[in-house]
Image 1 (spheres, rainbow, N blue to C red):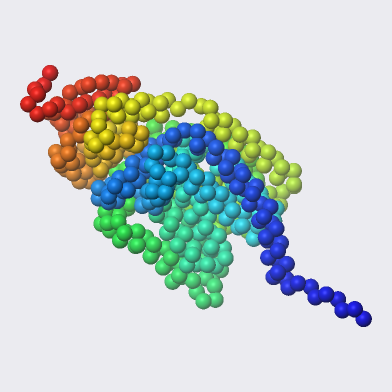
Image 2 (cartoon, rainbow, N blue to C red; image 1 turned 90 degrees about the vertical axis):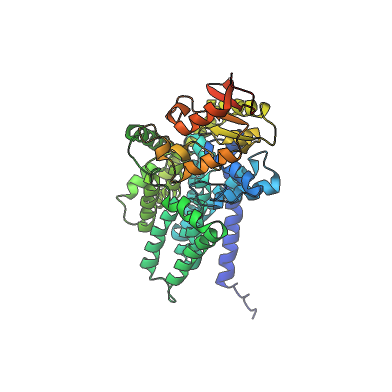
Length: 490
């Protein structure tokens, strides 16, 4: 009697099925990630955050010290990423970090697909990954296409939820720390991670020490690798004025409503099933709702409502929509995907074809700055476009790369709380000392009538009157060259 062949072990079959599943899905997600990021490569840069990071990276590469000679209100991870990308591929273009942004979006989509597949099956995994990438561009292109802080927060937050879902608490804590080190609001994902820990009891061996260690050790390491006191001040304690809502209520609320409307358009395919999920209890997605709520809190933090803040909403929204679509008729899934694809196409066209007048202005200003200075000269750009330094390839005369840090105009303040007295604590004595020690060869007043114009900033006005003369103008920005000693004033 012929013996029947032994069936392969179940684990082998499952691994083979998983390999086949991902072999089919990964190329699709990779192609979609590349497609949705095409506009990001169409411009030299998209917003001042990219410019700030590019200038920081160059300064760090030439011996600058983060939170000492190079300062910002952000943690160090993304500046380090820029520095590393520039070290490998040069600093003349942001293409290297744009590639990293594509990979960050792809990794986020893969993690969401894995989360959804584990919970609701193969189709749900494909749905979550595809929907996320389609809605990932549903904002003003300067927010969605920039290789900014939030883009690198997203894979960290998705990784934190992925690890927590599997009870890998040390790795979950490390992912939370990475999200915080990309941007402070990334730490919001700690709330749903803790929810999952409590709901599962932390596993048989108890994962709380591992979760705490994973979250704390990388942050302490980053503080020690920079300047602990400076790290604490610039990332936590030194931004009280920046986070204030006073003085710009109407301006900020208008921006918030506009960006909320844009997100609603970009997520038009997701919102109907998510609203439906509010009335459906079979999805078992309590931690996903908490993730969405925590991300909404991250958007509200600081009361600025910039469009790129809203990116943190998209991963939990994609998962919640996927959860709801599992219990809705199949035609709802088709509608959600087609609607999301249509909206995605509209935002991609916006990114590819819409004019960017501010970028054109900054490019002209950088060209004028480069013409009027030598490569070794220090320059001061008094404005909110630090990318001027990068485009002109000139060294900043100060560690404060924008007028916002010195006047609290950061975040688009247009009310009364703008001026010297509202700058970062201790900034003005440091700034005056820097200008005295290394007087810039050129000062570019790019305020163009904003509340931080030199006529409203006595310390800067004194510097201009004492040692500079007007030598040119570019689109309303005024260029002042240093007067040689003994040359006299015109």
